[in-house]
Image (cartoon, rainbow over all chains, first blue to last red; front, top):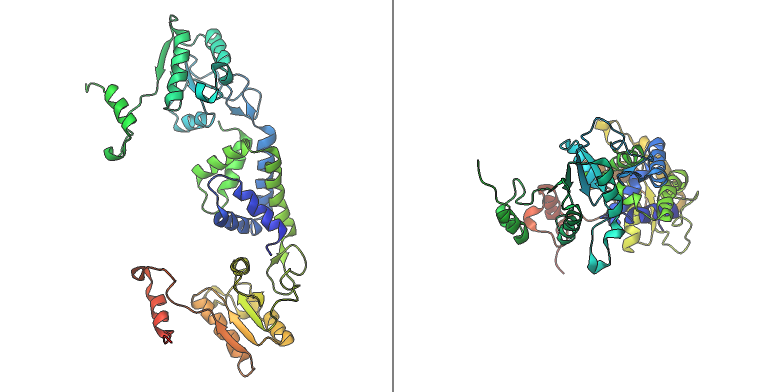
Length: 198
Length: 198
């Protein structure tokens, strides 16, 4: 009974994560009454993202161009390279304006159990870059998980003996968190990493 | 720093109701990794809904055709006409399979304070239809509000003296509701409309 074009749009919205039937219907009805210009912009944006977004040929983060704006930015600190496993997190860091170095995005994390080996996540490209660019510090901002630790330890081992400082984001109790909701692993790490109050 | 094509898609999602920055970002990143086929289907659905959806020339509900499938369905009960103020609710009724009559969708509700008069919501079209189709019952399923009451009373007054039965959806306590969360107006109506237990 629902018109086909409307039904197709509802089904489209349902393809998105976290959008169930009710929300998909609400969004589809909203599109019916949307300004034509906005609807065109919306449809074009979907097509353009699929056509234009690619991985930066240097750092592997997302860009419309061959080389991303960060890799092209000569004003950034070339001494420190932040290694991530998810291109989304580059934008997260950038939005917070707390880091002024360069980035490198791995294609995931080493996970022998899932059959993901170092060569699968593009480690050679990272190592080549570290060798050529002469970074003074490599900062790991990988997912805080066994796979994240495995990956950073694997790369650290390869770089051992070089003069490069290897760091990772501090793990511990999130600021403002309720202590009783902290999981055991986080609390254990916060204890091991405890800092002297100066 | 966010690539333009990605930023445009984030802004597009933010046009939708109930979708803030965080969700818009999450959805846009999801589209990047979507199957090309699904992304095309999504974009096409937006364009098609804008191009194809129109109001049924008889009942004013939403359809891809000139006349909707319900108006075209000869097997439906032609004695009762359900009057609504929102085309969405036609699909809600249909999904629940609890009504087999015909529908008529008004272009809103009478609201003198907002400058919305009977002629603005297409009442003449409804009255013509009632006269021509010889319905035995008109069932109002309008928003339960002052405007909804004003609208149904206005139409009832015009139809007074005809043999047509005029009804409205029962108002009262929602099934399964917690009594303490029922608003005063609903409770008052439930009291006025109280039914003898038989």
